[in-house]
Amino acid sequence: MPSKRLSVLVLAAGKGTRMRSRTIKLLHPVAGRPMVAWVLDAAKTLGPSRTITVVGYQADRVRAALANSGSTFVLQKEQRGTGHAVLRAARAIGSKPGTLLILNGDLPTLRGTTLRKLVNSHRRRRVALTVLTAELPDATGYGRILRDRAGNVQRIVEHRDASTEQRRVGEINTGVYVADAGKLLRVLRKLKPHNDQGEYYITDAVHQLIAERESIAAVRHSDAAEVLGVNTRQELALASHMLFERHAERLQDSGVTLLDASRTWIDPRTTVGRDTVIYPGVIVEGECKIGANCVIRSGCRIADTKIGAGTEIKDYSIVLGSRIARNATIGPFAHLRPGSILEDGAKVGNFVELKKTRLGRGSKANHLTYLGDATIAEDCNIGAGTITCNYDGTNKFPTVLAKGVFIGSNTQLVAPVKIGAGAYVAAGSTVTRNVPKGALAIGRSKQMNIEGWVARKSKKLKNRKRKS
Image (cartoon, rainbow, N blue to C red):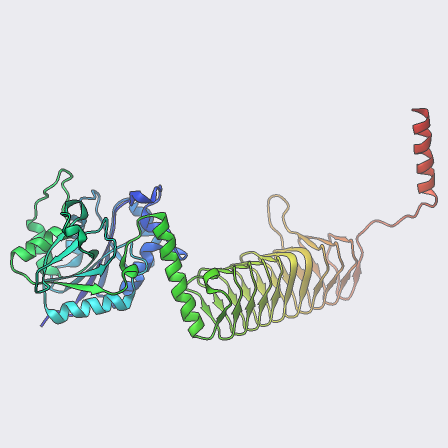
């Protein structure tokens, strides 16, 4: 009976030169996350006893990106092929018998269900190794699967080594393997590199297993796009598109309206409540949680934010790292920076910016306002053109408004400052001291009307022109 012990090995050591980038290929983002993170997520759905990631080029950056993945890391200092990478991980794999699933880190669109079917097929057949394959109309560049008349795998031949007849074969090696860990490691230890680079590969082990009359299976996957690696910027964009499209379909199936899913980009980690309507051109990044019955209009960008039910975010607003309660209204053209909090029914209007500010229940800042490091209680009204002057060039200071405060238009609140409950601040004021409860604060110069000034000025100008 085959062992139920499953180890997962993710190969993440190579640079990926075709990306033309200073950054290792596997850290390039796909649908908002490093592509290798999606591979680890797919593997995690199998509940493996251990996950091992082989790192090499920019190893520290890869470890940092996957710090919360639960993976053990093994360093392949010299990248001498996939076979060498597996041997580097031998100690981490351990000596107990079991099943080893080997994945390339450049397969972000790989589904957990596909891996489960592959592992189950391998165990059911009780073979030494199973390779996942796919059929392509144009297999240029890929290793070909060669079978005998009975359908058994005879050989995996690389494109550069294939004959003209072999290149007509459309079945390719995806680089995903399930193996009896003990048998694979045994033959890998026997191998000697047969090339100038001193490299050896898992495919070499496959050929050695066939030579030893071990059984090799190949499972052909019907969705080739899912199991193809990302090697170029074009393929990077296609992988992101596929993941966004899948998530859009899940959201629609759960009762979310996407008016044009092809022009809406919602991070697969984001959840959206039923009967929410999302317009075209919306970008949602990170682990957002959007409640039911919300409306998010065109051109909005939302990241790492929680949005309560019934909230409307109007066109071209940016909401980052914020918490929005129920039935709030934001925008158009509003900007909520990280740390902003809107309580139930709060309103932030056009060209209003918030930074680390709490806007209380039912409070509103409808026009042309900056509120930074402010705590604003319920039922306050912030007039157009209000500014919290929270920075003195060295330190940030808070502004606190109690319940029911009314701030007139074009007001500067010079922090630190507190405005008492029910107080009024007259339009055009510069407030530098605390305002008591129920008081009216006026902080502006006294108006003077100079009678006849315009006529006298006009006369002077005419006289100058005559003299000149």
